[in-house]
Structure formats: structure tokens, C-alpha cells
Length: 178
Image 1: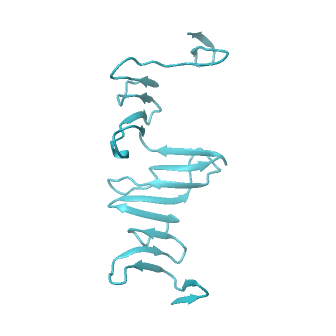
Image 2 (image 1 turned 45 degrees about the horizontal axis):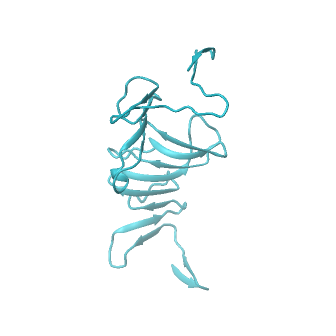
Image 3 (image 1 turned 135 degrees about the vertical axis):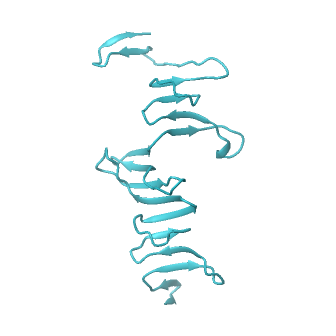
């Protein structure tokens, strides 16, 4: 039942459906357990809130659960577009003051471009093996790869006291420096 009391709109029911008054299309549902679903898959209760933005495209809000931590907070997870599988990529809070970005495969950062985010070219890639490529998308099999296709590629090391690139052996023994 719908009631208006003291300026508050109250609705009493186990499941709440929201749709336009002249349509049968459902847009939002709040389940009896308080789960909010927007845009589709209205009966799911795995995630506290889920938004379906297209076919197999979901953004879900849940408790973080990362294998390397035991003190996670909340997470926003994204589905795989090909089949809607969830928990493959997400952002989450952990260790009280840290922020994590996790993905099953490559993590890419895009910047620049001429208009919206869709025009921003890839600038950095961390692949699933932990290799970092700056300025290109080629995987050259090294831990860090810096590429500039239109000029020189420089790495700057700057400090007030020590200014060097130190090369260490696996046991942390100094092998030399530049």
C-alpha cells in the first residue's frame, strides 16, 4: 500500500517495482532483502546493488573479497561483456587506507585524445604477468618497456642527495649503478 504521511511517502510491500504509470516495463526493483536492481536482472540478490547498462554489461556493488587481503571493505565490480561473467575486474578498498584496482588480464591507462574518454589513446599497460609498457602496447618480454614512436625515450631519475639508477642482484646485492 502507498501512504502519504507527514510529508513522507511510505510504501509497504515485500518487493518494490518501479515503472512508468502507462507502461509495463520495469525499471527498478528493491527486493524484500533490500537489494537494488536497475535496468534488468531484477531478481538477483548476490550483490547489494546492480545496474545493467546493456546486454551482458553489469556494474555491481558488493563487499570486496580479494585473495591477498583479509580486511577489505566495499567494491565496485564490472562484468565481462561477452557473457556477463562478474568478479573479473573491480576497484576496492582494503587495509583501512588503501585502494585496489584488480583485473583478470591487462590493466590499461588512457589519457589525452580530442574529445571524450573514448578518444583517449592507451598510454600505460600492465599485463597479466606484471610487465609494464609505457608509451606503446607492444609486449617485448621485459619487466618495464618504455617506447616513444615519435622521438627519444628518456627516463629521468632525480633526487636532492643521491641521483642514480642502482642495479641489484636477486639477493639485494648491489651489482652497479649509473
